[in-house]
Image (cartoon, rainbow, N blue to C red; front, side, top):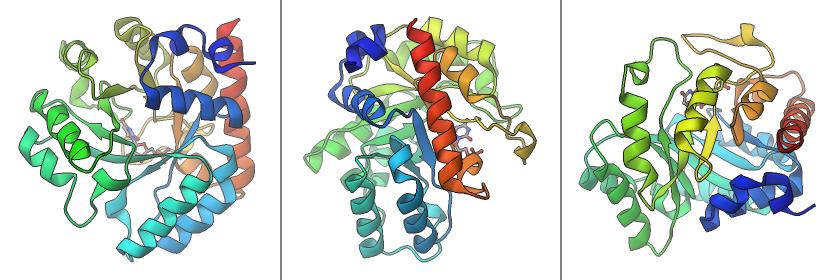
Length: 267
Ligand code: S5P
């Protein structure tokens, strides 16, 4: 089956090349899993990608979590992820004014060179997207921003009346906007978000874990199948995979659940 048949309206309306690339990879791998690779050493990251890379469709990083980070080790790791056909998604959660966000794409980590996707809050206005876009274009690269429209953590201020609506309204029209981060732990909120976003943008959702009791420090978890059926296009899974006794089996399981949910959604 073609990606168009599988993704339906989303394929037709999400026509950015990078969104199409994600949807194609997801079909090839039969997985809507984005791995949140929240490990602290290069060795752990390399082992993890070796182990589960075939069962995920994108790799989400927090580059500043790593104790023994070096440019060479990082380039190697990104190379391995690319061999596994993964989009690289740095979860930087930018939020400064445009010109600083632009500079923050450089610096030691230089995420403009290797990140295909990056997260941003619109708390300081739309200029953050302009800044990120300019940073990519200066190194001859283009990428997409996932804008935080909802969050999975308890008591987050994005829930205040009007915030999510304003973010969607502003970001939807911006060419750097790949899509939105939604709250994977609350299917009903996600359905509302999908209605507001429409078909033309991705919604990717963290806060997904088959064991809701794993949640610590205000994190909230929901079910992967519910998230996809409620309009999410990718489940972002961290500890559900990397803290599992057998990460490979866990990744396979999340992949299967997410893929079957997508097939069910199109029926
Ligand atoms: O609202 C959010 C947004 C994000 S990007 N809630 C989140 O948990 N995240 C990220 O998803 C978070 O930074 C972490 O990397 C991942 C969730 O990890 P888990 O171990 O709880 O699955």
